[in-house]
Image (tube, rainbow, N blue to C red; front, side, top):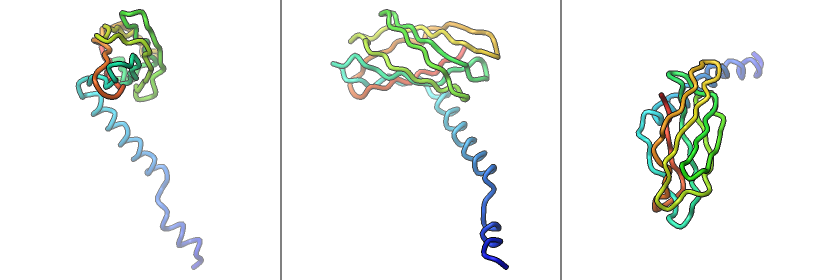
Length: 134
């Protein structure tokens, strides 16, 4: 027997490995989406906050989301195939600002707008996770 044949017998099917990895990622994102929205962790003297999360159109991922803060700042982001999105707000007031999300569902239709609470500047860090669903 040649060494090449033994090497081929020991290889794992690539498709199964990639499928397993995709399943693990999808499950992790699903569990993250089920968690309540956490406050951002921004330094109180910094008005910069990273906003990220998952956006849905019913059971499906949305195509994109625009978040409009009451202070006039607005940002848009495309969602990836599982609905994850991210954007940066640069002018978050010290007492926070209410925000509304405009969601584009794309192929699935049913675009919608929804209040997403407020974007705030907490004491440490600079991330806020917001899950958006009807």
